[in-house]
Length: 112
Length: 253
Image (cartoon, rainbow over all chains, first blue to last red; front, side, top):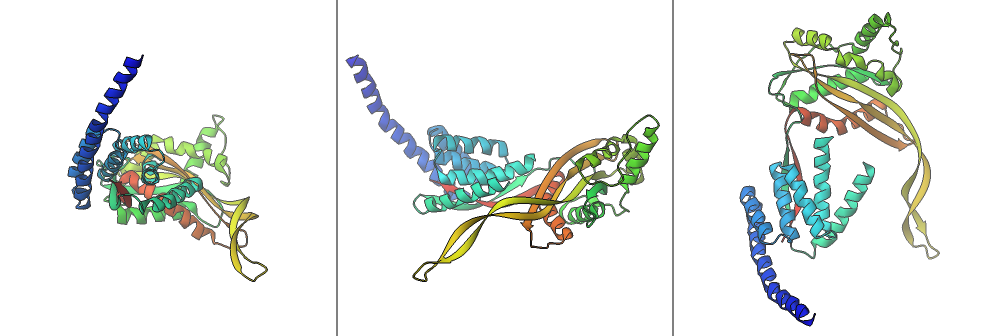
């Protein structure tokens, strides 16, 4: 029992820096994506944010940004999935909620 | 709809409070909306007319036809056919009277509510009639439907702000909830898109919009009608042509 607990603790300690590395790598992709999106290079931004979500699937900001980019490209189904993933990861994030509410207004209009 | 707006405003307020303390960037976006209907086969559109009812202050058939034609002229690539508005109510009545020998129910003289409209709806399924109209105008896309514009009266709780002064003469504004009589209009109906080649219905969409004012406010029926139609126009246009909706979103780091 004690050995098992010890093993879990060792694995958890070993995994923590890996997770931190993943977030750090994903963050670089997210930051670069923001820079290019601000210059209107949305396809490059999508590539960067998709990479960020692959590197760290728990990074809500990356999913949020990806949703915005999909929305801008008119891919509303993918945008909805990405917003929902972002909200699943950070249900209390008011900025993601706001983006999602604005998206829903448009999405509802197309399906009305 | 109102609940959606209130929740949107609430989340906007909460979001503004968060913007100040997170790494976030506001960015303008333009969302392209693909048309709901593939109109590549048509170069021209005929807004034929509507079966309309409700208040007599607004001619729903004439006003809706005029408004949709003018919107399509400026915001669609289809060429709009100028023609007399079809008296669809008479056409439907004649069709129904032809059937009545077979025992079909007759159409009401005046359309006052939704169930009165239903007696006329068979005209939209009359493929031969629409095919004939299509031939007359060289097979355009035909736009038709129903419009019911009716007065509305409702008692509801309304929140307003009231000035109050305390014992020191200091002014405060407090929200006060009062039960109030509200008057307005309701606009219900359906846009129907018919293929001028085959006479078949390609697409149809229903709508319902309402507007309420304080009972002591007098708003002309026609201006309320245009206010309500303004809300429906974007959805109507997005059926036929692609639209770009401008907005802003928040990117997060």
